[in-house]
Amino acid sequence: MPSGVYKRTTNGRANMSKAAKGKPSWRKGLTKETDASIMKQSISKTGYTFSKESKLKMSKSHKGKKLSKETIKKKLKMVLGLFVIYMQRLGSFLVEKIVKIVI
Image (cartoon, rainbow, N blue to C red):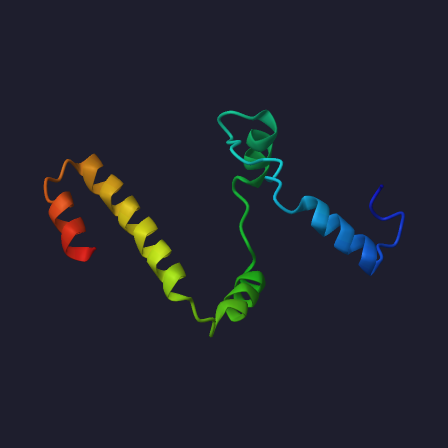
């Protein structure tokens, strides 16, 4: 059904939502290195910058949001992972000790 031609009813939206549950995204596992369409999207966004007004709006929308403990742990794990990669590239032997101390 083409979008924009028909008005979506509440019931129709619910049916589409049910049909999509449990199915992976169309681009699950695709990267710009393995898929031409993803590479094209990446190239088209390269160099794009947000205006100051847009940045302010985004900043306002995130102010005051409380992150769950689970989310904080996930973010910390990601940052530590990036830190470890960075330190490995520098050839530091202290990486393992630092990770043990922090975790």
